[in-house]
Image (cartoon, rainbow, N blue to C red):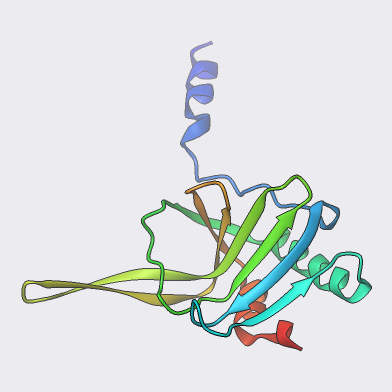
Length: 154
């Protein structure tokens, strides 16, 4: 009996769980944008009713399903002032998912000044529900490459 209680007590102590990944049928629309905030950005909208767009959304969902959880981050993560490319999935239930190439915070101390910059985390993406401060860091080289190499612009 003691072993059962110990095992049950340790259940919540593992690594964070991966977020719920939507199916293509749960995606109402999707869009990708990049560039400087407030300036003419590259932008593309995807509609699951369009067969070509649906194929792209299937790839995105597949890459998310194949991804591995790396870590959880809070709302105090580094957010660059330029970019990054953001994929927005608008779900049929009204929720929104934001996906971006991952950027790690790098803090430098120069005398009495503290400077915070970002360093691109190659092969990783940040996944966040629009109504949450939790950010899931996922390892997904295909999705990271797709966002950064911009084949979505074609």
